[in-house]
Image 1 (cartoon, one colour):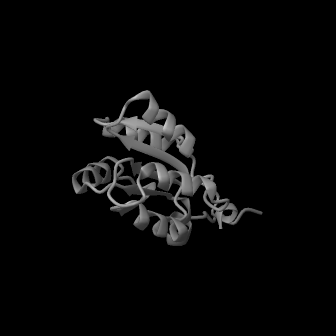
Image 2 (cartoon, helix red, strand yellow; image 1 turned 135 degrees about the horizontal axis):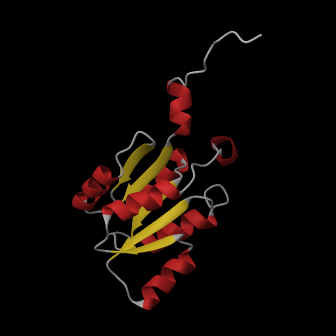
Length: 145
């Protein structure tokens, strides 16, 4: 017998269904542009200013997608941060998009060697980048933890 009850997702269920996205760029303007482009009820957006800060955030957050600027200050640029993510057994399934103004074939190949899933050249279309992120399925939190 059916009771006529409906399951309605509560705050915990809704949070579990959201795709976690981390934007890493030393340029506040780019982070702001991506914040606007990625605004969605389906996305939980986080930001970091540099590679070292991003790795600390990634360890605890376990994002579904990381958008990394290639040229950031400090010892951990986007290529190195990407490689560290992809070399970590707990993080290797994280979808990584590298953003760069460097479009030479050698730069793109370095992104592939680092394990990036996509290499996007600046200037980029915020709408197309948002579509790329939307196409990445959210991961299973059980599998990732």
